[in-house]
Amino acid sequence: MAIPLSRRTLLGLAAGVPVSAALSACGSSGPGKSGGGATYWYLSGQPQEGVRAGAVDAFNKAHPKEQIKDTTFQNDAYKTKIKTAIGAGQAPTLIWGWGGGTLRTYVEAGQVEDLTSWFDEHSEVKKRLFPSSFGAATVDGAIYAMPCESVQPIILYYNKKVFDQAGVEPPQSWDDIMALVPKFNAKGIAPFSLGGQSRWTNMMWLEFLFDRIGGPEVFQAIIEGEKNAWSHPDAMSALTKVQDLVKAHGFIKGFSSITADSNADQALLYTGKAAMMLHGSWSYGIQQAEGGDFVSSGALGYMTFPPVEGGKGDPSDTVGNPAQYLSISSKASAEQKKIAKDFFATGVLQDDEVKQWIDNGSVPIRLGTEKLLAASKSADFLQFTYDVASKAKVFGQSWDQALSPTAAETLLDNIVKLFQLSISPQRFARNLNAVTGK
Image (cartoon, rainbow, N blue to C red; front, side, top):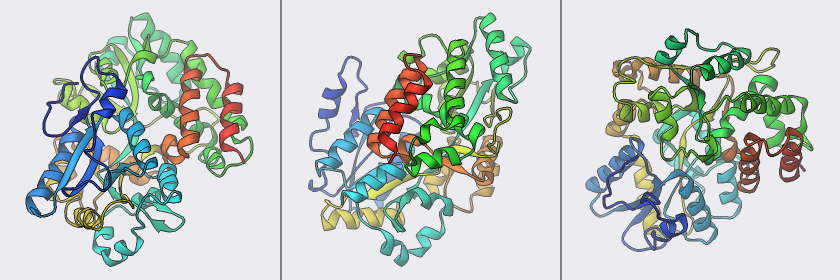
């Protein structure tokens, strides 16, 4: 995806630039105590990048004496860079993230500010946000991050034109999914698009299969460190089923070489080369921006992940990101911390930003937006997303954020091997038990 270069540093986008070189290009643009105001790193990629940049620009314009310098990174590069910077005590003032287990490690290392008393003093800020968004911002009863941006459940997208061509209906069960695979393959259409090189994209399949087969308790036992939790019979069933799908050629050929950062997985869906794709709600905005008239013509279908026959999970449950989060580096100067807190109070999810998220097909986590959602050109999708997020009895956080960074990295590495069929479900479980069990 082409993103115009601007005063913001776009890392790792130029063809042929090694990731290590791209990361080093950041230089001193964001360490915690650099001069010239606060610093802020976040993800590149349109249309989301434009909304984030707009919020910073609006704040800087309204606060000429309190400036925020922003730097953007592609998803995978950011995850590497921010962990390295925080570990070295050189984090940006504002730390963008997903909360959960990663945030806990920052807290335990004393790298982020406790914001509990600030929220007590600014209760009006807290009251305007989804209450559910504060769960992943909270560690041992204290708040360490400002929830921001949008709610992002994982959604099963499908190309209606391709389904019509094949004369089939969207799947209502796991058995339906498996039955559709040979029908699409027979027509030269990949059943599912997948940017497997990015690893976390594969993870979404396991998140839903664990939930639909065993319910949220199976992964909760992993979070709580129960011994051999990954070897639970329902977990083994989920691991086996995803390999069944791989063996049946359920995914696009060469999926392990496709990256999500490039949006190539999205293009496979809207060009009709793949029939379905499991992806986050943010994918709607990407397809709307890059897929020509694919979205506006009504060719994009979407649904929740179907149940698995005999499974214990509630089909209304979902997984994904309850919000995104901004923490403040404990290494920042007093001036930088003040700028960051002023941004929380007057720069995050203001009216213009809320409107932009909605225009991009996202549901912002600010309360009271129902009329704006209903008036949007994407009203049907926004209402669907709102209902999925608000009606789910359990909204499971993305595993690579819910787990500690060490366990998450082992998880992602082994998920790649699982999808490549180079390890068995039993070996996968043993490898994960070794890093998450007590």
